Length: 622
Image 1: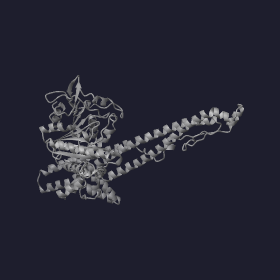
Image 2: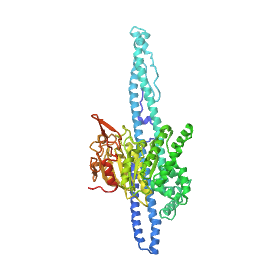
Image 3: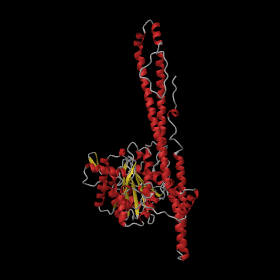
Image 4: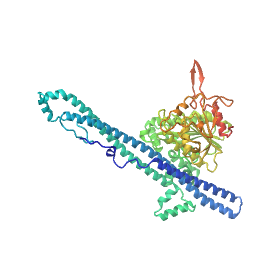
């Protein structure tokens, strides 16, 4: 008799399924609450300091100084640590959820293999019985390729008046075929389970690595680093107390852990801003520029540092990667070096395509600059989930009075980064102080991925980091107005990012939305105003709205959110009617033998571009 295993027998301990993503999300929520409390305390103490500073006495001036160097700085440091901890916990929650999904799929594959093994075992036992012998197999060992022949077979042949060879010639073909078929199923099941075991063990290691990453991220927070440095409970407690109280502050040095974390891209934007400011405080402009050029591949996508720094670094990456006259072999080596420094693995990048994408970004920058619309910045040049990312700003984002950030949707990548340039130029004609950013900072979904939430969930962290980086880099002179614009699936990604940003933005605009995550409500979105527009002739967005597979419940139409203001995309004195789903189709259809121009949401003559200008100027009438 063959004893079959259970999934627990096949898959070794330990299991990668430990705890739940919800536990870490709850911890992230607690950290977010702490962050909010520290920010509230910071604002209240800052208000008190502002009132005291109006009295202009030596005593009150000293009180204001002490407030800002002790209590207020302590609130800032504690809030930064809580915010960085929240981000680390959210990243870990995503990693845990992914590991658990894959582990459950492994369990299902093992159970499928066991079911196949059970069927094969039944057949093998039946054949063995026919042959008058037993069949006892171990689920860890393959079945023999040919069936056994028992002694009773000869006796049965004699009873029938024929010899055993005659008996075998009449039946062995059928029995052997059945045996071989069942043995093949049995052996395939064993191989299936062996593959599952190897994947299970890799998932265990991936879970351990995720935990190590979480610990490392928490240890790199301002207070986490102090806790690790102490050699006793009292030492750690005193170090944290002194730093929070503002009585000590470690200088950031090149080669230090803080600098390594900065160029490693593991700091939250507020902490990245602090570390950068301390690094450059005692260095000349020439030294700072040399530092940027040396670490260009790393600094090109660090959120929180000044945007001029990110722009200089990103352009240095292009110059270094695309240097002419190197020869084919050296050029490939140069591209491989840049890709590795940007975090790409050899398996996820094709160097020829990588070079073409970088060349395309440089070409688009040159076109934007030739258009004469003012300063153009290249930002967030980096990697997300194996895809090259970039953002282009029309206008100096370090000084822009108003900022608009566009998040594109399905099948968008850096090759289409110029789709919004003409619309941005038109918007900035009315106010050159506006900064318009087209952000392609995540791997957008392909056609088959669009019905699922995974790409939006993955992209939200990168987008939230960019928005928080804007707040951190402009903390002393924030923009008068910040507007986030999401097109198609990009509205989903944008909404998810707004659920986790530290500071609220002024307005969130959706264009031709493919729907938001089921269950999304206005109160979750850190935006003071919400706008939505959907063209009557847009036939694509409703498909995305209705086709949703990964979450229970239908996707949310942003036009149905509480407090939303719906903007028209139809023809008016402000612009022409939008007649297609893409941002800027740039081509015509032939209908009935006549050419019909297709107007996208960001066609510079469209009604939506007119409405976006009004939102940026805070000039939308009820």
